[in-house]
Image (tube, rainbow, N blue to C red; front, side, top):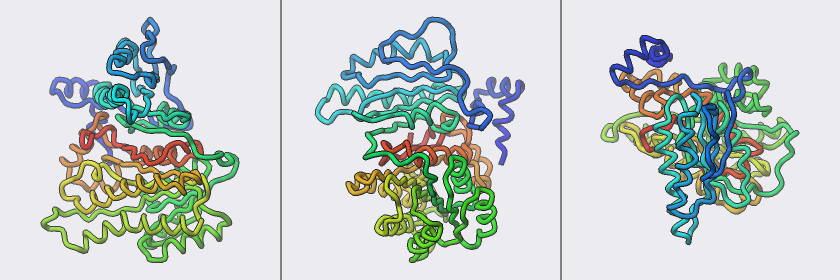
Amino acid sequence: MADRYLRLTGTAPGRFLTRRLGLPQPAPLRRWSAEHPSLDGPVLRLAAGEAAPAGTQPYAAVVLDATGIADPAGLRAVHTSLHPLIRRIAPCGRVVVLGARPGDGDVQQAAAQQALEGFVRSLGKEIGRGGTVQLVRLAPGAAADSTLGFLLSPKSAYVSGQVIEVGPAAGEQPDGDRRRTALVTGAARGIGAAVAATLARDGAHVVCLDVPRAGEALGELAARLGGTALPLDITAPDAGERIGAALAEAGGGLDVLVHNAGITRDRRFANLDADRWDAVLEVNLASVLRTTEHLLEAGVLNDHGRIVATASIAGIAGNAGQTNYAASKAGIIGFVRALAADPALRERGITVNAVAPGFIETGMTAAVPLFIREAGRRMNSLGQGGQPVDVAEAVAWLASAASGGISGQVVRVCGQSLLGA
């Protein structure tokens, strides 16, 4: 459904009216396209404490290296470098602060590096004009190329206020010339269809899975992407076996597993019957654990594979009327963190991450009552809802062969929602 308020604020009368009334003035976001794959303007890189270049040159992005800040006094260097530049960030621009992981025994360093998180989250709420601000924590030996490539591109338009930890990638990286196979559940429509299309754009052969009743839409999507349709109820006890058999027929294992299938059965808890509770927990959580366990034990997921699951900000902040849904999505976060720490997976170079969408413009959110829908759109730092492609781009980044140093992360794709900050 079109965001008419966003259209209104894009006109001169609309800007005047909303400014006079003190209403939000969201900026149209620059998203990736083949015609415009990059941000407009230069990217400035400097170390904390380094003087900003003189002049009025606007920057598409600023990357500040604050990894060396080791005590609270050193935080002054962040102000020294960024303060003169903040008004020179172009519309839909980026600020990325590079930090270090807070040390376990060094209280001074831990305090200073943790302070960067509060700074970044606050600046993200101030920057305006469609700009975003992130903190990337680098472990020794970590390479940030994949993460910076995503955050400094239009692909990250709806990601802001995030703290992303990057460690060293395990083992030799896979052959970049081999075509990878990706499985996307819940692929027939909405976010799942966008994820499938984005992975196909990036060169993957995509196996599109959804319930049999969505078979027609699923088949059309798979045909359009040159992929494979797999009509299957992910909650079936033998779903893992049937997925493995379908992949074997296709002639190989699996490189990317995207758990996107999900349902809602909203009721306030006092009115929530056991059937609605069970249905949501089964689809959104239990089937994810069961299917993943089978594919790992059967050796279907290749070395250097990527598992990306869909959580939600409801699983982080909670949401009235969604106790079942929030429980299932919080469970996904627990699943990701625990599985990512498995030494056997780490040795094989398999990463496990989650995306946590906020208010995304889908058929599901279009059915939300008007005033609740408008509140959902405006209650984030970017002042608007996201698009399915915003979630898909984040999934594609985490699923990339170059993202081997990112695991156990939960990245919110929510425009820096004011819920669960």
